[in-house]
Length: 252
Image (tube, rainbow, N blue to C red; front, side):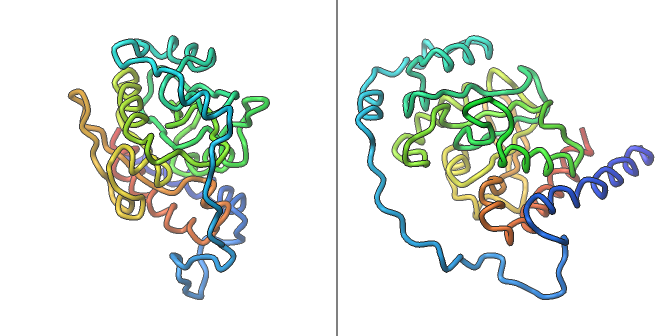
């Protein structure tokens, strides 16, 4: 166990600088203090999002009732790819099924499928940063089941809040199928859908999601897109990952 701890520590030190660098920061620690929660002054209020005609038509399609949701992950992936009207699968014409093994220790949940490039299914900048972040605590993303509330991309770039209850129900269905040992929830929309609380109220400590007899240690943290847009948040993200590494990964 002692040797394993040393190896884990070495892996953290070796890969930490990599994901800091990818996030656009020269060092992990600065001498000067900073207000990490300060809002960027360039963050102007966005215009109210509107649905395109295509999205309106797709939203009117009758959703597959819960009694007919897929009973295995292979069928779920196929139904998503084929455009079946599952929750979150009718926002746009490009649909991205979950990725990763059907059985895993860590299940990663975000709001949108933007850790993948929509054209070639390879890792996007968000996905590359996520891989670096997880490598820093000894987790390979290839061994994680990665999924998202919306399997198609809304033109607004956001999951409609009114849809969160249905999206959460379908995500809980996926959790029952995968039956992971732990969860990592990325972003406020996913946190609100599954835990009923905003990200800033859910992070900084492990939560527990109780579902179908499972008691899942759950980490909530920032989505990689937030860390790329606001590098100051990366220090808080690293603290979150350290909690997960100490209380979940090293105890597995």
